[in-house]
Length: 244
Image 1 (cartoon, rainbow, N blue to C red):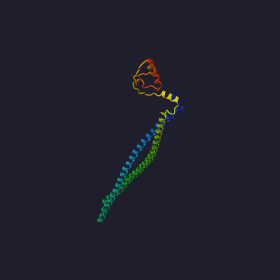
Image 2 (tube, rainbow, N blue to C red):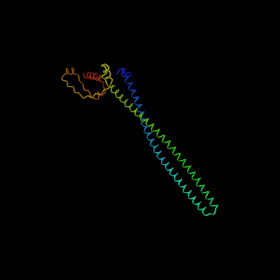
Image 3 (cartoon, rainbow, N blue to C red):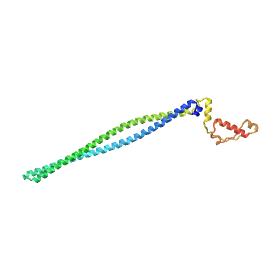
């Protein structure tokens, strides 16, 4: 923090604090954005699974209803056959107690069996219908929740874009030294490492007097790769003293 005060003054320190808050908020919003996107993906998969399950259960329900109709028709046909056979027995005019007992047993068995089957099918149908209604309600809830998640995702995406724009503006502003005074600019530049790409300069010395008037030296790129503007001049004069 002291470095920031020395480098840019109190305004820069406040700016960096603000920039840090923006960066922190941006990371948080990005994480929330990712979570909402994951939620939407899960909700879509869940909704697809539910709709597929509902579709299959409705097909099973139709199959059960069809089986119920088939049993009703079978009951009608069986009862008609029993009735026709019993009427034929009566037309003979000869009483047969054994036949009458078998007839009653068959009739009651058919009636009881069909009633039990109908009850079983009815219970199964009601179970399927209740299950389908429950799944349809869940599917509707998922759609509503998904819509809320998508709205949240949209707002978060806008917020992330806003924060990214703000961060970019602050980043650009932090590199703008035109606002600094002369002393602050000098101090700022002296604290920022610069990479200087220089070429070897061969001094052309005609006489000792000219060399004293125009001191020069050979500066290699490796030696000047991490020097600051302030230290560069001092380094050149130190080298001049070495040559003298």
